[in-house]
Amino acid sequence: MQVSYPFKVNHAGRTSSTENDDKHIRDLIEQILFTVPGERVNLPDFGIGLLQFVFGANSDETFIALQFLVQGELQKWLGDLIELQTVQITTEDSELNVVVSYRIIRTQQTVHTQFRS
Image (cartoon, rainbow, N blue to C red; front, side, top):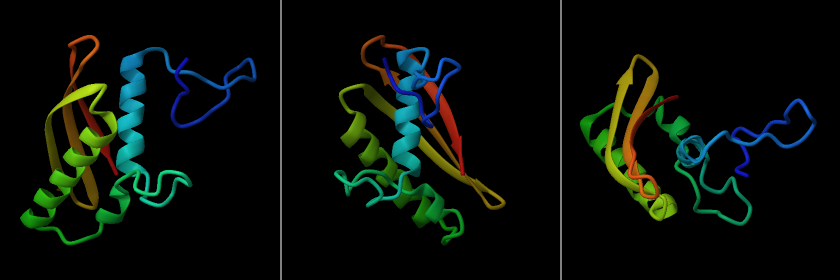
């Protein structure tokens, strides 16, 4: 059983679980992207904290640095589950868009998923 993210309780009053491993991997990526470093008690270096970059400097250099940060953190924490292919970061107005393309190692399925902050 993989606990769903965000945490919730199902209709039976039990911890809700994800319906499949693919959804669970997407949930794990979302946790890495939006968890602020230092937020987790026993994992102080876990997470990127993307929300802090929404109103930051809006330059090519910032996006390149952020792209490398995202790639490095995803490889660090999920390297045994996924083979990262690309990370693209763009902004629209005050919204940060992150598109992550990866291959699930267990199934060899390629997935493209988008996150917005």
